[in-house]
Length: 578
Image (cartoon, rainbow, N blue to C red; front, top):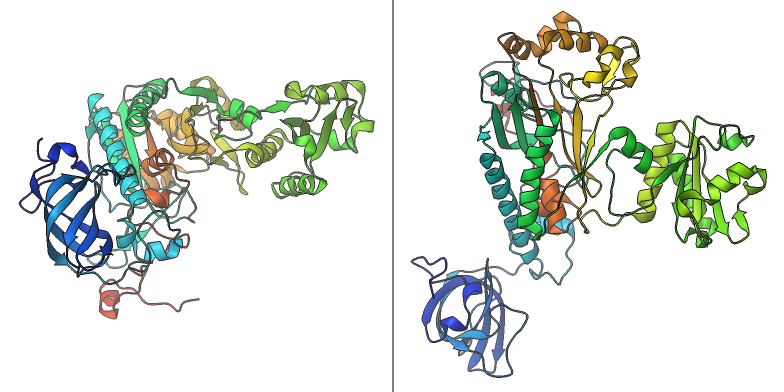
């Protein structure tokens, strides 16, 4: 058999040793995972490296303990009958006649490194270098490496060129807080770390690169949660002379190839729906398609209602199969959740063989009763939840309740991908009466809605699109504005004067004056994609050295103060904490 990962110190990884190696005397290296002594003359040592575990039989006593780093020289032998370990890939063989060389000693570890033991996360993060030895993190980070390599190959196969963009950049108008880096050579001036390579990649299109991609490190000084860290990695891409559909095709191909490598399954065609459809059916622009419980619009049936609770612009309903068994306490909990989300209240109706059971049932007319009783094919034993309010609010409240009642963990299969398109161009009006962009101000309006910019701007759709997997937004993108006349109209709608536009975006607008091709792009989070593939619900489990929820690095102690001399060089003054 060929040697596997042979070096001058070892002949193979322990996980590759099987019965084809029997009779060979070999060298292997790794950590002592476990030792067991049988009397004074025989000891067993489980040797672990990145590939697995191999049992080594040593005559005499062992002067080693767990996590010592050793080199073992021994003869590969079949295990005696009745001693096979079917849990191990190497469970049919062992090393005998072993000689042991200690390469490094180890103090007692603060927690067991086997996956069977639950360990407090703060302890794991404080000793992350030990936590990395555990099988789960080893598997997750190697999966991440495979996914990233596959994405790179998929983009290269589609004739994209990988270009690195700067980490020290000028402040950008992308909305999130930036990490600021003081300049030593330019007193009182600052760089920022990039939230994304957005402007740089658009400049690459002006520069004629046509198709760009990057596995980009990005940083945002935002509050952390399960799917967000200060530092994150995204697959970033931009292309010229393309449509929205072209970009979606490029990304779908890359993600599908990564999915096949990670899961062994072909994800098939990705679903597509508009933002308006997603909000109507699922109450969110991040729809989870793994389960039913779709929202239904009963506004027409209640258009002439005399029930005050339902006199609203929209009446939305959600059928909960088997929900008639919910206790009053649980219904009260759902009602309180709806109120916290902004609803005035939550109406509920139990479906029985005799009709609807609810404090409101007797106030309904025949049409209203029939529409509720027939929601989504309701049958006796089901529960109907109703919210009446503005369309968007009613949809979002019921969408949140839908997730509460039915959503499995995000990492649990099956994998359901969906493209969400035609997002609103503007998300509202600020206190000065100016429109607020839903995306960055270089997003192209939907071509069919250009005439609405001046007359009915809140109805304008954008050429923006998101990719969603199992209810998590993987990433977003858009067709960019490359025409100065359209850009001027958008700036004007946003209340950005020509002088302010030049101040904030001058170097990009200046570049556009020298011939900007039509272009579009996208970026998605590799951390989020790998977390789902790895079967975990927190991206910290697929990042080698993550921060805590408060943004601290428990292993290094960061963030820390810096010496006064360095503060003086940067023209900074310390401030009191608190």
